[in-house]
Image 1 (tube, rainbow, N blue to C red):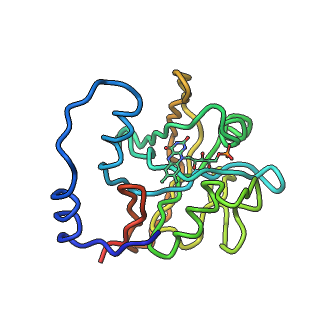
Image 2: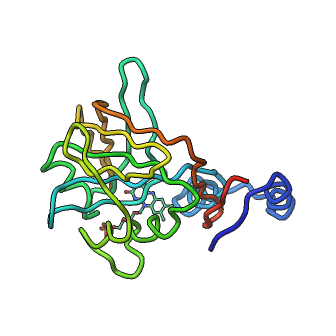
Length: 181
Ligand SMILES: Cc1cc2nc3c(=O)[nH]c(=O)nc-3n(C[C@H](O)[C@H](O)[C@H](O)COP(=O)(O)O)c2cc1C
């Protein structure tokens, strides 16, 4: 589902959300996190038929000096083993035109591996990880450290190269994609 973002829309959302105090269980946390607007990226890794990747909202910078990214990946996803094997990954920050790509890399429609890349152009920069040609920005990393914790692995990426196109990014909130006006 696509929605155009405007200040009024978020005001309306704030008005209809019922006030609730809840426990610290998983469902309560999920409910709370639905209200957090996040930038959408796809993590890409691998080569040829071994390429795969995932749509994430967890990618962000750990630090800019030194330049390090972090992303939290589900250990049972198809992406983590490929990131681990190749030792490299890219964080591709998506824009308004990439909603279909976000769905592909979320595995919607059962797409797996290299099929998630179809319909879009990809090139490589420094590490060999695939970078989306018209990403809002793409950040090319090698794994500096991976911390396995609970269901996920926190991957710290050392930045080797960056591509910036200056477009507006895609936002996910309340279970829907929003386009910055
Ligand atoms: C908006 C959105 C954000 C997501 N964020 C994450 C994330 O931060 N980490 C993660 O491991 N999976 C995240 N996912 C789920 C993965 O995209 C999805 O599980 C994966 O691509 C499919 O798993 P598979 O590769 O094992 O088929 C997110 C999905 C969506 C739609």
